[in-house]
Structure formats: C-alpha cells, structure tokens
Amino acid sequence: MGDKRRIIAGNWKMYKTAKEAVFLVQDLEDQLDDLAQDDRGYDGVEVIVCPPSTDLKSVYTVLWQDKPAIKLGAQNMFWEDEGAYTGEVSPLMLKDLECDYVILGHSERRMYFGETDETVNKKVKAALRHDITPIMCCGESLEQREAGKTDSFIESQILGGTEGLEAGDMKSFIVAYEPIWAIGTGKTALPEDANDVIRHIRAVLASRFGTDAAQDIPILYGGSVKAGNIADFMAESDINGALVGGASLEAESFAGIVKNARK
Ligand code: 13P
Figure 1 (cartoon, helix red, strand yellow):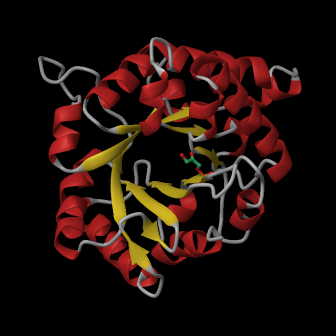
Figure 2 (cartoon, protein in one colour):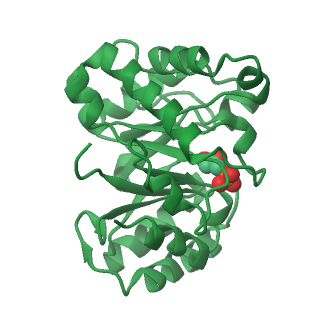
Figure 3 (tube, protein in one colour):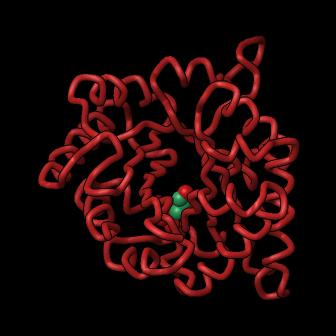
C-alpha cells in the first residue's frame, strides 16, 4: 500500500450521557485544534466518534455548529427503514443526523444481543443503501486463537458479513479486526500478529472483490489501543488505524492516539 488511509474511530460503548457527550466532543475539538485540519481530517488522520444513540443528536448539534473535521458514527442500527420494531434505530434516523458511519457486528453485540453474520450482513446492506459506511467488526476468542482457528473463523465472519455485496460497495466500507481477548483487557495483540490477521482479511476480501478493491479497504485494529502503542500498529503494512474503546472516553487520551497515528 502506498500512502495509506489513516483512521481513528472512538467507540464510546454504553458510556456518557448526552450532556457528557457534548463536553467530551468539545474537549476533543480543543485538543485537536493545533493540528492541520481539512475535509479529510486532522493532519491526514480521519477521526470518527461513535456515541450511544441517545447522544447522537447532541453530538451532531455540536459538530454542525463548530464544523470540526470530526465525523459521526453510530454503534448499531436495524436494517429496516421504519416499522413496528420497538427499541430499534433505523438507517434513515442515522442519516438524518449526518451519521456517516455505523459500527456493525461488534463482538459485544454478537455476545450479548445475538447478532450473527446473517444479521450483520442485512445491516451492512442497509447501511450501504443509505450511504452510511459500515465499520464491520470481526475477531476471534482466546479459545479459537489457542486452537489455531483464528484465520478460518475470521474468514467465515468476513465472507458471511459481505455476502451478496459487489466490488463497488467496497468503496465505502471499513473493517475492524478486534480480537475478543484484547478488548478492554489491557492486553494488545502484537502489532505484527495483528498485521498478519489483517493481511489475511485483505486476502479474503480480495478473493471476493478483487485485489484492487481489497487494497483500498481500510482495516482497523481494535483492542486496548492507547496513545503509547498506536504508532507501533500504524507502522505495520496493512493496518489503517484503530477502533478505540476505553481510551476514546477522555479527550486527551483519544487526541493523543490521533496525534500518534499521523505519518
Ligand atoms: P478497548 O479499546 O477498550 O479495548 O475496546 C476496543 C473495542 O471494543 C472498540 O470497539
């Protein structure tokens, strides 16, 4: 990959009330203010925040007023545009708040809310239909890793999640590789090991969509990323950035990651 895309996305998970979300995003704007800013992001790094759905409106309002280079994403959505689906949020509702990204198939949603590759695939298609870029997650458990099943498991997640898509769809598509054992544990994958799995993901995507399309798909690493370790991941050939949990909940630590993810 030549000049690779660099993306840092914050997954706030189920943290922050709407008011706290406003403070956090304003604080983040301040922390990033000394970086060169354009449509693409901060000094070549695209920055996305993914607050809980009840915070999307308040964060949208701040972003709309201040116009920083921070993009908005959601953490989940349903695949229908509207209907009798109590408790769900639709792609139309996200689009209305200029939510350009949506995390889909996070391991916590698969573990606690019964998401499968099939439901992830329906959501991915719905997101693409509405011009929302999916950040589709995959990642193996510790048992799978120890049993030598990482590659085959990841392959089934990638193929299942992208079933029925075409190469053109990949223009607006992001993958996040998050080994479950590294999420929120303080244990990170070794950058070279993460890069090996990410190269495998790219090869799987190439087998379905062709090498050219696969080369341009940003693939992020997630799992205990901090300001102190992001540069090691960015130095790897195939890693385009990070999906950050815990360290995205404070402006200073998240901004530190953005700064250290620069070229
Ligand atoms: P942590 O950065 O807290 O390990 O979380 C990673 C994650 O799950 C991001 O989606």
